[in-house]
Image 1 (cartoon, rainbow, N blue to C red):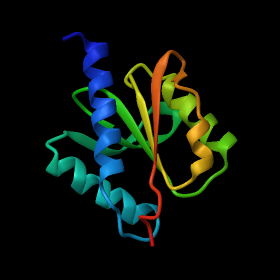
Image 2: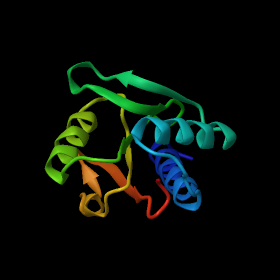
Image 3: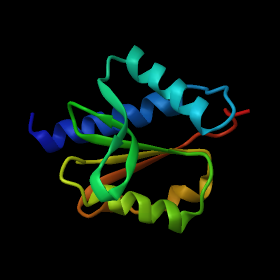
Length: 127
């Protein structure tokens, strides 16, 4: 399997994992902790709070596939779009899933800087 195919497979796997799971927590920090547990149980290697130079700090970097996972409980669409675009410009990020509680984030483009983006909207699972 080629690297892009592996990246897409991991991207889709992560999206499926989080949309199947019902998260019962309040706030972004607790949601990140719950996501870390789900990823660990699924055997997905990751680092948390990874600094990507001037682009900022992404919530998770899935190490084997170079997938940068961002979590958003709040924030406007333009703010989230700018943030993901900064991450997509980085060489070490090959794909970007956004895990969010905001349905309005679901209209993000499927590609940013030529890298696949997937949005997983958590509906009704947060306190």
